[in-house]
Image (cartoon, rainbow, N blue to C red):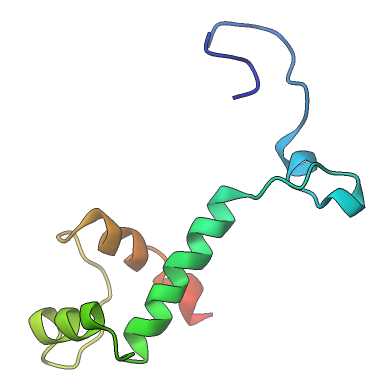
Length: 94
């Protein structure tokens, strides 16, 4: 992103990511940290799942895959979305 499209380009980076994602009030550029944003949204889905929110996808997943009441520990199958969500189980349980 900062070097351009040529991976072999040895030009120094113009700005470090932590500085860029810092709020403008603190001297940064105010760019959102997309990794943190993505994790927050996926954790929100885990919250809905564990609290059995009245949402169609929550009912579907519980009825189809977790009828025994056991919560997921790890999953090798499923959509990329569900696998990404389950990767955050440890963060959610903290």
